[in-house]
Image (cartoon, rainbow, N blue to C red; front, side, top):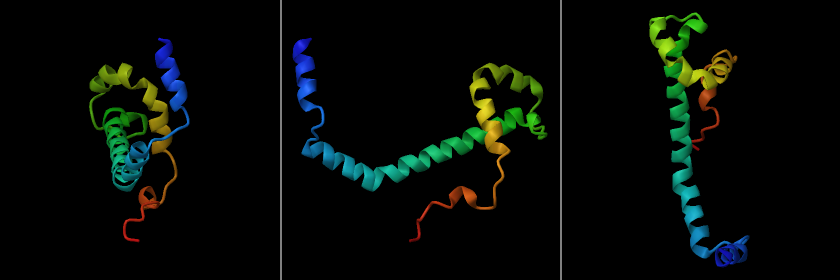
Length: 102
């Protein structure tokens, strides 16, 4: 156990060349893809929540039976979803930070 602790203590604060190279290429190629995947996942989750709990906002899409069956699993996300849906936005504001053409 002590030998593991000693090796971890010696490497704290030191980055190897391979780790720095790996992080550089991740930032070069993978970061934007990962960030875009997270944005897409969030958009799909908000769309799902709208379909299931749209009645909270006045948009009845599914019968309330299905929403009540899913409610225990989605309770932690309801407050965040309602805040996001009721936020004042302008057209195209979701993609204002993407600089793909520049």
